Image (spheres, rainbow over the protein chains, first blue to last red):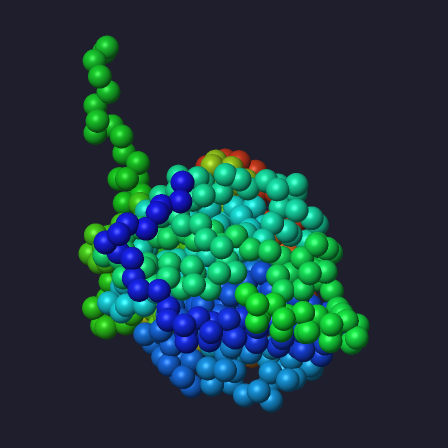
Length: 293
Length: 325
């Protein structure tokens, strides 16, 4: 059901320099995630690793942001349905100058604003708090409607987990967004196949996922979620499209734990903690993967 | 007699048009937009019940019909507020406070977003629609959510005043309102301030503390009791949170009894809030909580229910007389 891009609206793909930047930032996300989870002593490594390229592509190619101005009113918005991957987002917000590295390095310590889930009240650059699964797509729809009423223009990206597709409110929001022609609402489903208790399709199956979104009135694209060139090209193409009346769902096929082989094959890594020696091994592997990708 | 049914016999929308109390909501919101406030409104398939249809017709670009997706509506309102808008969203109190409790807590209150939640047809005012539609827990639920202001206006004019005052209120607000058919209490103007109770009168025997739809029948009872020579006071405690502690303690200081009246379970609502204040202050005044006594309300036309639960003027008067012995 995925819609192939039509020749008239293919935007130019990222150049070599941009591609290198995106890969570098995805590696940065993974390495910082390893480092920060060592501080917390527990965290969602593999949930971040599956969406590291999505984070990188959004924050270094797709989204309109202003360095040091997390509240710039016309910025593109980013919401996380899978809020437990916030540990991978925080380093990027520091990179954008939204808060200091000192704050980042106090991740999860008493009084520090950074927790396992993003908190808009406490963390500059977080556009919407999350933690409870299924709310974010509605929040993103509200942002589109708010911007429309105020005659402002920005795009709203919502990163959803594939397990999150089991939550009813997601489908309420999907119906609503299509009905209200929220064309600048872009949902990205991180289809890594796993949730806490096991494989998504064993727990409560969600396929045919693309057909479901299409049937709800969304334009659907399927993409390799680790291919920064494909991701960036698709997101550029969407921005360039004349038809911004239908919301867009991107099903990003990913591998949970991508970059660390052990985590890719061991689903128990949804939530965990690496011993320091294994952390060094994981970092080595991430660096090798980043270079060969 | 076998002809088609006259289409004019279908009076649903006209029935709702006879809820004058609710017309204050749309009118107040229209005024706010005209004054330049970034008001947005939304509902979940109840624009005729809550009268927001008038707002929708006047400012279609500022109105969102969410259909029957209450949780989606609450989270979306949070998203709207995050862009600088001031959304007012309305649906039955039973669905808003119970079905969307977590969205209200997490997306609205915890995120400190100025969403105005309108729970209408609260209490037992939906009568024979059934217990599922009765909201007798909403005050308790909403009151326990940090940073959420909880208001139960007594009538349309007070609702309008509260809605207008809300533009200078930084916290999100839960407005608990009735079905719009409550008689007017404040026909001579309202001075509304969040958290500041309206003292109608003081009495040394007993002070009635009422909120929302119970203010009017309480005032009727209060007047009858005063006429009969009883020293009875009356406080309209329109803001349940933050509660006007001073007004409660003042009533307790000069009355032997404090009687709370609410169209709600006596647990956790107005009676619970007043009980907490009196107990912590070590007040010697005796508290009587009057409302639904921790049970599921019966199904009947609203007027029958108010009589059954002694939440009409006669029932409140009788309750006071029993207390005074």
